[in-house]
Image 1 (cartoon, rainbow, N blue to C red):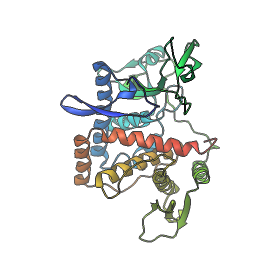
Image 2 (cartoon, one colour):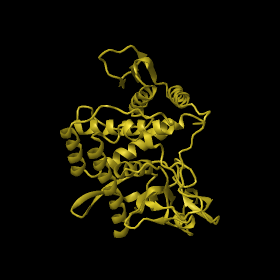
Image 3 (cartoon, rainbow, N blue to C red):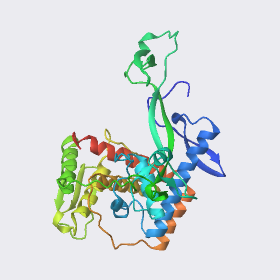
Image 4 (cartoon, rainbow, N blue to C red):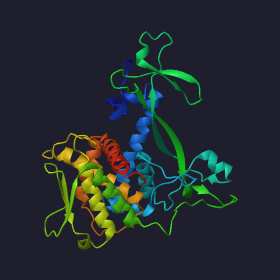
Length: 355
């Protein structure tokens, strides 16, 4: 920890409650209290995933499972991002909530609401970078630069003299919120808050096309729509090419975009994008990669407000049980896949200037 990291995530493990959980040293989780809080977040995510699988008989990273709720939002209407999208979406599915609004206790009180007796909060996470400060007697001034902290005070922070990058650590903070349906709003002045914003001029299909086109132009990935029969959509790493069926071969356009987002998600694994090392010959690594790109596709579908298409496909009990056992065996599996999905989706969106 003393030498710092250039914003690289370093995973380690600690034993807690007889289970191995992920502790991220560069998040600054140093105290037992911090590690316990992080462990609870991870445990809650895993339980929500398993509860969703049991309830829907489908994998929760299937785009159709979560699209109906839209993006979870703050009381202001601002959409949550990153892992919080899945923390709150999975909890809503598991608990049967139909609202996508999540609110802190103080805000609930300010608006005249009361948390229903027995209801428990859901914990979200914030991730931020914290650069290391220079000592006042810094003997290497070229390794320090002037900056300001959150209060506007002047500080000196460390950089890598060769790369110019800040040296510091990634930290986590957490917060508790309630779904709007966990609150009694009968005495609230404005009633129950609801944020499912719709814009009559917004066209989801055109927005999705825009994201895909910007990504293809920026990266140079070849994208072919082909009249496919029994051949499945796929990404060819050796040719950096995505092949999917013609749009007209899909019953719904939302299904087409879900597949397109999935396959271009695979293309981000190439060096220089969101490089990932995985071996398609290994079932566990392939499963994690598929989970990550499907979750990123579901996130992008939500971002575009694409229509939810109810799938008739249900997974067998044995298949669902297999994934449940895999999560129990490796409690880090879901969190790591979410982390990868977040990076994949953000990389794709960053290629579009006004998306």
